[in-house]
Length: 318
Ligand code: UDP
Image 1: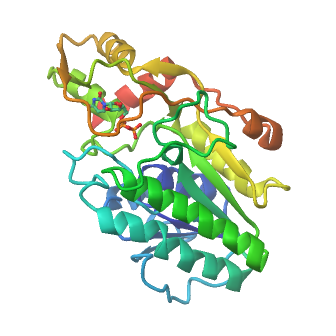
Image 2 (image 1 turned 135 degrees about the vertical axis):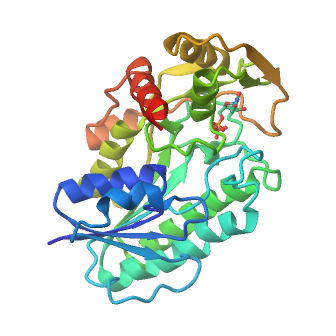
């Protein structure tokens, strides 16, 4: 049986990835420190004999008999929400975020080297910062504030990319870097402050939808099932070693448009309230996915309205 290690496996995207590999009958080792991940996300798999959960902080050297004979290693372990009002935000875990992406990635790359495992580093569209070019292709170097409030995440991800490529060049590791753009869907943390989960929960609860700034900033939202397919293809497709690939949905919307769509889809009488725009909030974000289409034959299938419908149903049931 092939074995996959998923660091950050108790998080939103990580737990969907665990589920998907379990249904392919792979052995899944989920490593998570649970500082921002949630044990609830992996509860349905705990009784599966092919699943093992190790509560570890990847910034410490990993030692466990389970961490042998690994075929694949994914590193998704990092706080990821920029919203400082949320306890789970990387703004509230600045050192942990920097170290998860630097020391943590280093230890996992060592593990990949020892096991001759394939490695995938989950980077982010945040490496493009506040982009002066749109859509963003992988060849764009970005426009990042190196010491601003978001820098712990942006520079953490940039370091993670650098060390991953250093291992490819120096040790010939079979690794790839995936830059994921805004992703949403069931199992998003209700309280992590991301725009889709905030708006849906505000709309359901009849509270004002909090649009930051004038809502003219854009994002492009990818449904989680599409993202999981892309991540798996990036790991399993031949000829992806040493490649940097964007994954996301290029359907770009303004935040105000998103608020109106969610308000309408939930039949909510909530008001739209304008709040202060967070510091260094990117004005536009849209992936150029030509490379993913060419190398992985991947493109997203689920449109925003369909994905929102499923996400609204999930939050209504909570
Ligand atoms: N945003 C908003 N209201 C909220 C949460 C977020 O207007 O309640 C905005 C935020 O300022 C940003 C966009 O929505 O422009 C996406 O924010 P999110 O935190 O989901 O992710 P980001 O793309 O900034 O990492």
